[in-house]
Image (cartoon, rainbow, N blue to C red; front, side, top):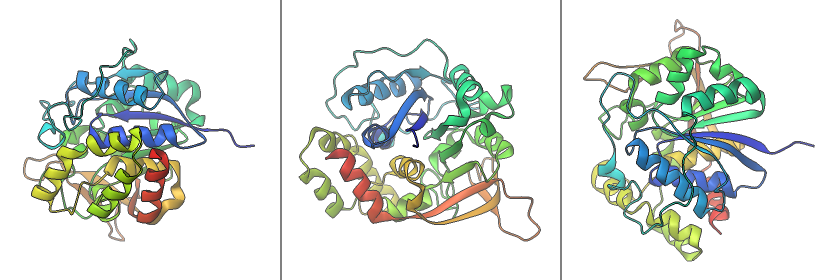
Length: 312
């Protein structure tokens, strides 16, 4: 009999990350072994606080939260508070957490978990890849030690949300993303990008209404923390509502059968100023061997139902 799906979740916890955590907590047969936090959407202390608040709200306050890197590997921190609000949670009225972060640094926790139990653990990375890259510098085989690694990262069609061509997580720390690409193998590392999210995870007014009609604390939480994102999405990216890239990546990790189209390719990350964070997908026959699996489309209705079931 198959046991629970055991997750390690690396997150820069803001609005959609919080919904992704809810999805993991509320999906039957899933167990979160640890959460590691990284600076990205918000500064590190806020990311850790938001993770604690979300886990406690979802009755999973026993999950340890390990703070990690407080800035990108080589660059100053540039957050996305203009998207998620100053608190990263859209200004939603949330209580202070009762728990406190674990003392073990996120990078040390990732190395320990990968070494001791990696074959039974799935790693889901929802923020900039700084923690993962820092761990890779110390253990080149880190990614291979996990059962599988899923990352919300990139835009395979070069249509960006933070710049013309880049998705935020990769843009925030492109050097870290490049290190992950260099160490990855397409059999064990899957990226779910913003291209899939803007096609298949947009919360249109109809979808928002169906979520709100549940009228449960979890549904209200999921909607309220994304209020700032809703305004930014319609004003900046032109989507008909907020999208949920991190929950979409989490949904694929929880249920890979949701994937409708994927490709394997050799992927590099641009680190120059003009193209910072753009992922360069080489589809030529003469390309180097594929290093990533890229999810391009997901069952949109299946994703929505998964979200509604989690919040019901």
